[in-house]
View (tube, one colour):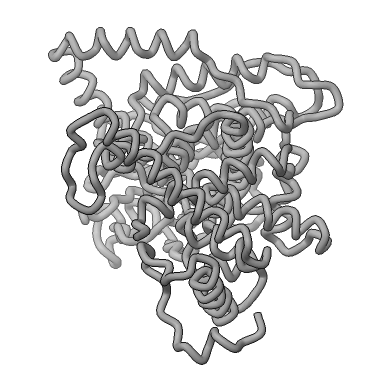
Length: 214
Length: 278
């Protein structure tokens, strides 16, 4: 037997019934794919289902925005919109809260970074923690002395964006991104008084970045 | 000496400071307008600044919109029929809730959490785990329903798309096909998408109306599977478009053409067809 997924709720107004039928049809065809979209972004299954439900509610309510594009395109644009709003919400929630450090970092805090040994006393642990916080403050200060456009590029890069993606966000060429990162590296070297080690800087020929206007 | 974790810690502190300093994030509309290059430079600069402190948002904005995935059994998104029904009901409940005045899509709000329903789901899942036999049965039924759903989708797509593979066949009446194949059913190619059947009438009927019947099977056991009444005879050929899916290969189908006058029916011709076995 063919199982229908209709939305029999009666809503006053012209064409409402056909919209319900259409929603039922979209649900049957695409609901799981919309759930999959949210799962790909790291949501739990329950979160993904909740968000997918919101997509279908919004699609129904925003039917007047439908411009005859492909149904999937309409659905996924709505899903994308909801996902961005979700990220905004989480971003807002994070403000004012302490951002937890990754477990790899907190674990390493209890060890000597040079020897890998666990500090034998509480005092040594505190000294090590203080040293780590000092280094972090020192690096942060050096970054904040960079020109704003270089800082932004560096933040994008430290945040894991690819060079090509940085170019799109910044509205500049790929070469300009490389040049900015190279310039940031050279300026950091001056600010820190030593080579900014610990990062896998993108390879750029010296002449591309050192004297180039960015 | 600096290590990667020192940079990570510094970066996280920078993010925290920046997020607090920037305050309220740009609206989703502004973000989308930025991604399309339709934001004035001053506002675009603010979005760039915001994105540099929110790499997850930058990545989400940059990603191309995906094509619909084919979700297969075993995939986490492959919800069971029961879960689909729960979600369908949750959507219906969402539709019943009032919308904020002046805004069809509430902005800057956290989407609703249907926690009560989630609780129900969790208890349902616990119950399901404890009944292995029921799960097995559900898997079998689920597989069957998956097949049914995919078949429905395929048929719907077939109906909605234009088609070119139509086999037009003129049907010579039973009893008049001696010279062109005896009394064997008229064979139809199984590869065709649809068949446009044109029953020929040796003697045009005097009856003003015609009735068509299609019966599946032979002799007295044949049963009617389709009929149409009130067809007018205006001199043009009668044409019947039969989708291939309507016919079961190997079974003979008898098409009866009947004249109707003053409520009385008269059998005019019969035509027997058969879809070839693949």
